Figure (spheres, helix red, strand yellow):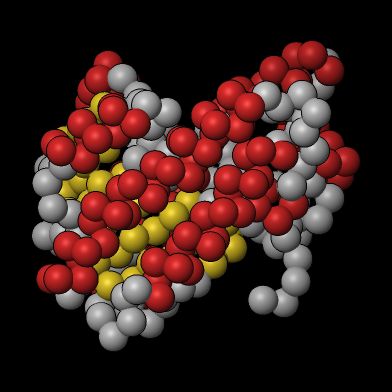
Length: 264
């Protein structure tokens, strides 16, 4: 299917690996000019090399920024050209209970997970509205509603993205600009693969057994009962930032394998 994306330009925060990298790969295949981002230029250049190796025709550039540092973000924004598509994907988590989480842990996750998207959207949304086309998409998480005990602060930041996304969408009324948020579930990113491999060694089990145990003992609400692939998540995001998704605005789209339940 032609998603009518050829000739568009996108910026994806946190896109040297995981879901962000997967989305970059798909957008490049659709003819989008993509600006990727990571914390270090070394990581950015490595990711660009991989993308160009897969797709020699890829129009990909990259910029480094530490989203926990406001000055670094300001420098990034000053370097960014106009974009048609903004994907606020960057995120971190600090695995601690509510009692263990320090003020510094809270501040760092708020800066990276929440303020990154707010600052980028504040810069790009007015420009999109002026030219009467644009896509802003936030990447939240199933943890926005599940709130695992050891990811309390992370979950709060991901829940906040739902309000930010809806609030910004309301500012696009009557235009061809949309703002949406997706809630991925457990996804087989590089980090998840490492977690499964480490647990398999620790528990003297196969990776498949550890994955099965995770869904039978931890993520019991999942209907999928497996990790989603990066491509499964990236495919939905790619559609949502395309012209074909013009009637979807102010929505929270779950890509969670049914883990968060409910009928809406």
